[in-house]
Amino acid sequence: LKVSPKKFAINQKLMKARNLLLQTEQSVSEIALACGYESPSHFIRTYQSRYGVTPHNQRVCGDNPQAVFQSV
Image (tube, rainbow, N blue to C red; front, side):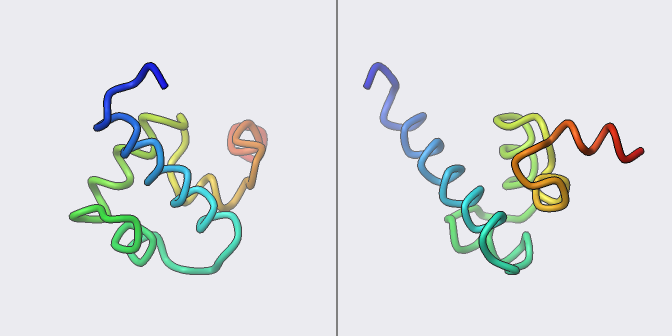
């Protein structure tokens, strides 16, 4: 896999979170806890670092994060 076990686990949690954001109406806090994050703020920072968009904006724009900038 050419990634450390820690990075692999983080990627798995983030993919699960992304699917929940796009496929459910759970709150960001509920998703953070469901995916094993200690706090919603830690989840938001990690998610934004990985995907370049906040979980809220991901949900609003779906699979098109550029729509965030187009809607402003």
